[in-house]
Length: 263
Image (cartoon, rainbow, N blue to C red; front, side):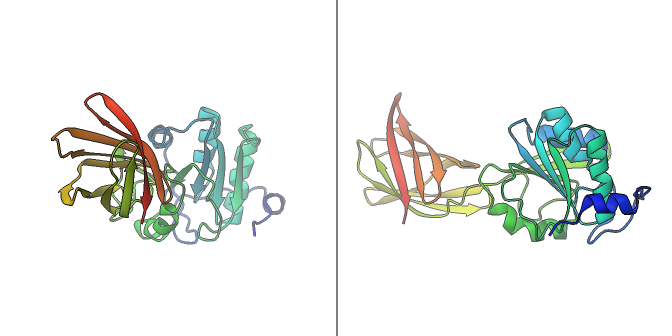
């Protein structure tokens, strides 16, 4: 249940946040404007995005996403007075048609529709959020101010004057055994191993197995190469959709469609 921001504003219209004030799990320290810009750049935020800022503070990231990029944004802030203060800043910035700041607990609030997540939390909180983030739609961009995601390595890091921004792109879940069915060739099996966005595996052709070459996973797009029995190098590009994939197998300038099903 969200707290009524109008009630909070009426109750204490003179409220001003104090640097370092404690919240539920972290103290409030605003993200510098220079790093806000870098975070939005890193996530490639556009007007097509819905950004959720976890631990919104005074709303600076959500407001910037709307004013600079035209994105819709929702800030989740645990402190009701700070949430009300941030919503007043939203109105003052004239972006209330695109931005709202709500009072809520980030562990209890649904942000599954987000295309971009921003946050300035501690590593242990990021780690607690990690299972939820990894269940989000592949391709969702997650950007953190300063703090990492422990074993989940970032896809990109940008250094600011005094702090850094890190980007993770939520990967599709592809681990397991797959049967590939080219249109004009015999089916073959592929085993994919996965640690977050890092993947590898083997392909079995006519009873012989070999390691995949150059296997890459970016969001829901999978790419790898293999050497066929005639020693030609094949490049496979696929779009992952749950337990199915669709794509093409290309070699020597020719390409054929293929599909795959997880066993």
